[in-house]
Image (cartoon, rainbow, N blue to C red; front, side, top):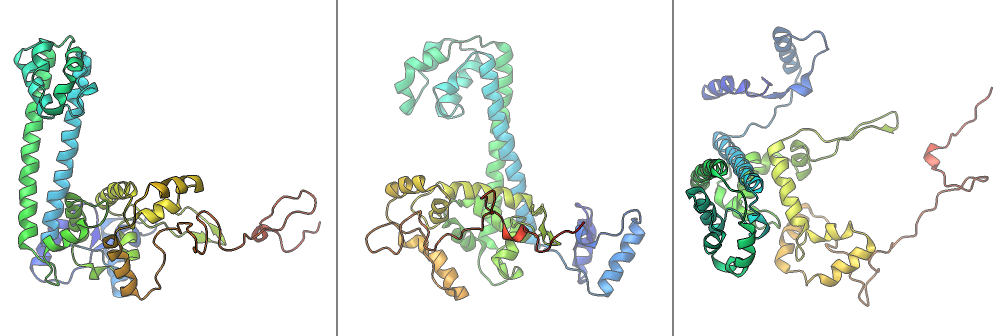
Length: 372
């Protein structure tokens, strides 16, 4: 069956319930010649490829993972809508001349919500509104009095009132989805009998990966990694591995495939969070990619590496029987084999042109000569 959007799902579910052996095929892998495409011709072409064993099935998750996908994806859309609604509230306040976001770090915090509710109810006195501040924000009451002076009217009150009601509804819906996801993680296990909750807790130990990110990752790839022979296959399936396009000795565009956009989005966020960590094993590649002068500055600020952060790379090296490699660049202390930022092998010099004294690439030089 050819994967075309979501049109394949109803037919797939009916055949799956009846015990048929199914295979979902990526449409990009079975393209027919241009100008000869129709539903009948595509079906004949798929049957012929299947007869010769040239079809490769795509990953179709089990029903539980499909439910988690729907819940986590819908939750992400609601979170995005909630963020847009918060930005809309700030835009309305800016139009009314209320500079609350310049003083309070969170406009929709406890203090911010109390002030917004008072503004919607008809209160316009900056002195009274500033007294609604709570906690550490009370130290900024003079700044709040100046920030709450503006031209807030009934028009702005109606817009912000609707936005506050919408945000409250979105927060309740997100909480309901969180409870449903938590319930599925508590009662389900993968094919090997490992509970989803334990797999989520293992992912939560990775630097940059939180609980909600771990739930999204499991919902996209499942908890059974036997479907992917290696991490490289998983990265390629997710669309995070560079392409290989070499023909005639020339390297073409190596852009990544589309892959799973939901998985790529959450992994990108986790990568940004992990890149800002310090006392983790993921700080080594980040440090090595920085210029030498920034490496020295980052190394001086870094505290000793905690042993528990080395469990994951040690497990990988023991499982794959690979020699242990240095996780972090050498510190430059006495007795080190190399100084940070310096090469351990001599730099290879390319041959220079005899007349222009410019470096030339030996792979690009012509081996023969042209004759007129």
